[in-house]
Image 1: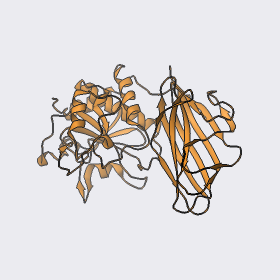
Image 2: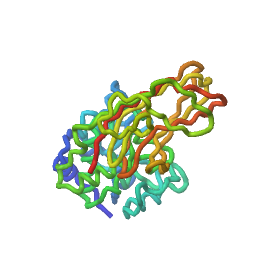
Image 3: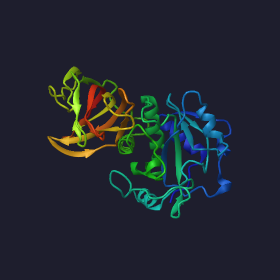
Image 4: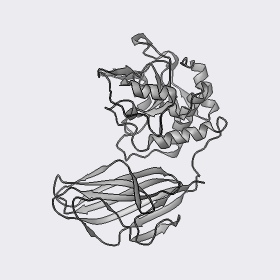
Length: 353
């Protein structure tokens, strides 16, 4: 059981962790405490805002909107890496979620991910997350392609570590909204297991010392030399037969591996699929291997046919453990063979010890 931090203690913890803090006027008394309890608190929840550059996102998180009054979080972390404090107390950010997840967070008793959630706001077994979690709303469109600038991601990790350090919590007290409610998908664009590892790295150092990845990553830029046929019904690794740049040396000539662990990478792969009937789908995903043995798959993205050429740019962001390698795989669900007309992969890789 943890008593919520006072406003002064929260500000001090954030600044000690190295966060740039903006106190929005009136935030210390801006809360929803009249609607229910605030505390005991057990963790920090990460969200994306689903907003673009035309939205005054801090104003939105402070005041809310017609369907949901503010504050919508403890703070809003903008793309420039500033933590804007918008609420001190209960906020409308988490809603209902799974009690099994809450217990796993309280005990920090889970593995890589909390147990799968089976509840959401208003479901019969849901518990109130607004009373139990601090919330960071992080500025992002939430489409899986809007980037997370380094200064913003650093601020998200540091702000989360600040709260965890102040309470004596570990990194497993941080979860994403999608891990709390089975209705939610946020945050998109990075993996919460990787985020928690970064929080753990920050907590392992004195407050304010963690700075994230090496600012000098290695550059990898690969492609296919010519089009090839993708038969329906089976996952097939993209073989990158053109190598413009491979600073890591991890891509074998004509091979499908583009990164090897221990490492982090962030970038994109752009794909052009020809002959995909309108409405038919080609799925794409990252897959991990140990040698030639398939070990793990990551979330699926879908390319929907338009009747002509079909184009998509997919995000590639992950941390790879030692001994693992990463490939891009495609699965055509069309009834006829289709053509991979072009594939261009561009990633930055941070090698880890």
